[in-house]
Length: 159
Image (cartoon, rainbow, N blue to C red; front, side, top):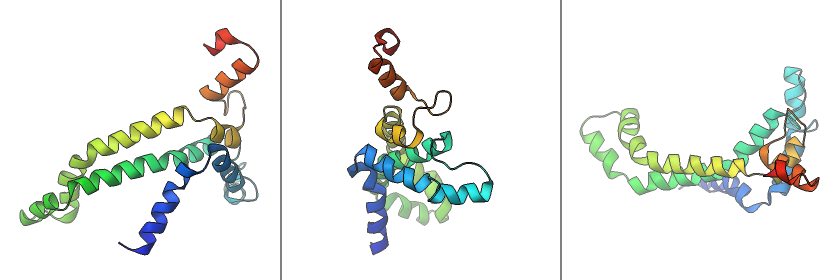
């Protein structure tokens, strides 16, 4: 265990402890004109990532990353070192041992984390509203559309 692994783990887990609107606010600042979005706009010549589909994608990945990382980490820890040691005794190089032994054994955990992250992303509201807003045809997602229809009293469309 190195100190930087603990720091990286804490940073990856941070979206789990922050309320979605707080995370969305800080990502909005980071992806906006005075943050990384401004730098990207200067380099690419396009608008910032704030209030764009690209920004929504970046924010959703950051918010869902802890689910995938923790599930994947637990899957690999559950395997242990024995299967890899056996592969090494059969003269498998490290990459082949990882691809043919460790990865297939950890696949159920990786898939489970991916499914949980996808399900979490589909229902995300606060983060999506902060980063993407409610721009029809560009950043409006299902949860925002549902909220808009309930707020305007359009219950039939909300259903």
